[in-house]
Length: 256
Ligand code: PGA
Image 1 (spheres, protein in one colour):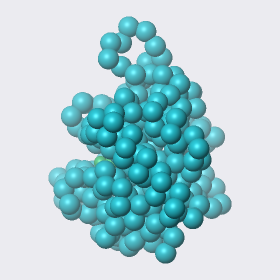
Image 2 (tube, protein in one colour):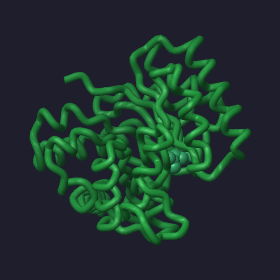
Image 3 (cartoon, rainbow, N blue to C red):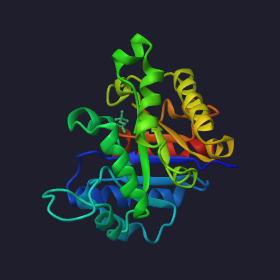
């Protein structure tokens, strides 16, 4: 089965509403003019942007809108939280779950993340589920175990049918926002490992259908070599997704 090629932007906690709408309209116009391929484009913004961006993206069906988090609860007395249903009601279709900043800064555990994954799927939101090791875990050589645990506790409880709906992102923590990128070989090694774990847990067909994105200081200069690897199906882009030219150049890596 042909896996989807995907480039997802993660704007993190940046941009006012007006700035977000203006960056998005710039990106949408550039996509219209320059992107001819089949790749899927996702922009993950702060909650405050979602409704405006979804409205804007309606006319362009190759750009999808995503949140960066969601509540594991359905609804009710959870002041400050945002539910899957609320996200869906804006027109957004995706949600990043388990980003390393959520895990490290906000203490989100594998167990909590698995509940968020369930909520997203229950309400028809596609999870972009992130896993990744720290520098220390990379250096000690324990990173395969760490990644395996994150998969096992976060998403491997899903049925094959539900698992097939998710997107995975490998984001080595030491590469996020640091300017350090995993080498194409390092990234490929982990992506192949993840796919093998999916074969073991489910089967080859499921493993072959799942898009696994690389994230961590991805830019127009290194995306080509990374995305050329067999098991790398695109990228989750932080810093470079805030610059329309860079984001477009990364998207167009698939068209050269
Ligand atoms: P970066 O962030 O591209 O700025 O390293 C990636 C991410 O955190 O998703």
